[in-house]
Image 1: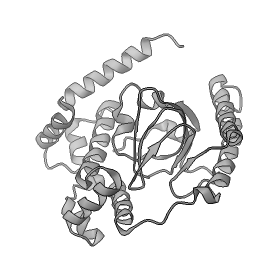
Image 2: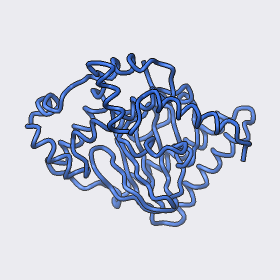
Image 3: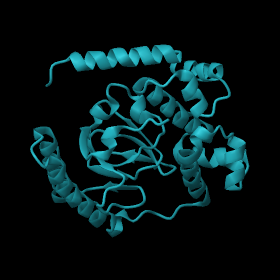
Length: 279
């Protein structure tokens, strides 16, 4: 069972509003994706949790989120930006670690904007060899990103022990969230007490360790309920719940609705969106 999307094998450009599809949880909840993602914020502000750290976002911030990296994005209502979604199996060279760049040079800002807009035009026009053309533009983005990341002003500051622990915890959550493991087991594997783990993660991210684990499970649950036909009891089993009843209580507690209502509402929203005329 998976919440993956067949489109993950294609290059895509999406606005930040398209990424949420009208549902903020798609970005706000801690989660990871099966694709690399290059985010380019051009207006507004927000908070980013990435690699076990919390960061402030502002205009002309570029963020690269490698496939499998835990992140959450909470943006203000006036924020505008784009996301380039890149298949994890791409032969193009991208950083292997997350990075967050604050771009101050107007010429450098316009370079990335032009690459993204060119790729977006190819996707929208859907001409022959559009994916090949998009790959050429995305290759330029990869060069841009590696050039900027190598500049001294963007070299990250050394992390303290608590920040390193938070990063390791984020990695473990991405790998193990569906295992049914307890917080005590995560802490034991990381060589610390649950109290110390919670304190370190809270200081680094503004979220407790339990909050992050809960959010990742909830994201997977909502994705599977709203985007696949899998029965709720199968989803519960896949995510490590002891029973379907416990899963239902979990969903009700964190969304205010049982699984059946979430699924019904999602289908109604999809139907409404499909009936709207193209812009």
